[in-house]
Length: 134
Image 1 (cartoon, helix red, strand yellow):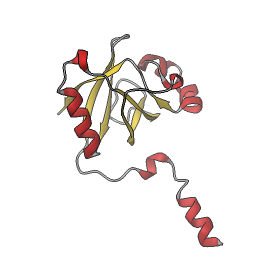
Image 2 (cartoon, rainbow, N blue to C red):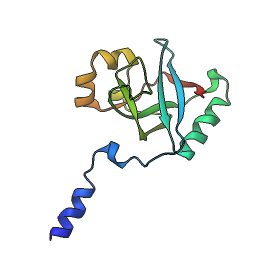
Image 3 (cartoon, rainbow, N blue to C red):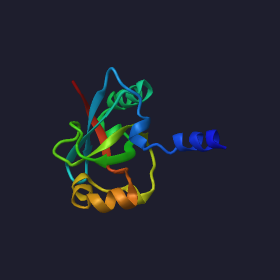
Image 4 (cartoon, one colour):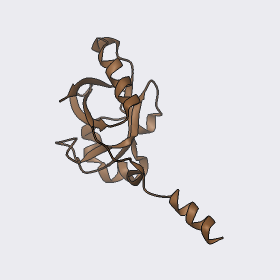
């Protein structure tokens, strides 16, 4: 019974605790086209890196995927000047997301406490990746 309870507790770790250690993070810049605001996300997931790079090969007008993922407080050295960041291992690119997590960077910034408490993820429909940073 104790082993079962301990096993169940392991599955309840915070999202950030599940992120695997990384040797090489890749950072991407995104733009919210309607509000002309940029923001950043990084990952060490080789499949996601390849997917984002495929999207970057297309002209901006033909990029159809937007970012969707879990966000956390603080820029984490990745998403300055904002006070939030996408959690590595918990974001991706998608064609569709629910409206609840749609918004723009400055709106999330202004309402950060409520956004983190009530929504948790950020999926700006009007976002597109614009470049890979070195």
